Image (cartoon, rainbow, N blue to C red; front, side, top):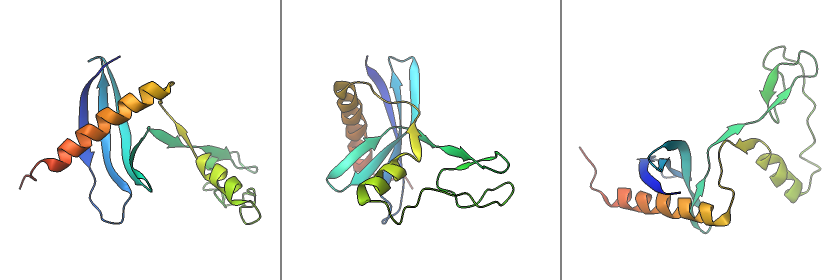
Length: 132
């Protein structure tokens, strides 16, 4: 597998951890969009494209985002697991469960390869003079 193209779409904003979106092309044949470049506590990292998970309303079965308090369709209260009594680790796991990856590397080597290519392209994009 070879990443044949990386496109970077920088995002502006000083207080935003999201620095850019990236699109990669693999073997000039397969495209993955919405890879995120994020500023973390120990530097930049790459997050794979994901989508928000949904839960059904117990009253009307309408799909609502995980951790919603009320149904968007019927307005009924949705009883969620109580975050107030959960340990910090359990709260972190609950937040992680809100999103599921759409595409992701299977091996550590593949993840490192994608991250290196995307972050190298991001650094190159940052170094370019801005067009006016």
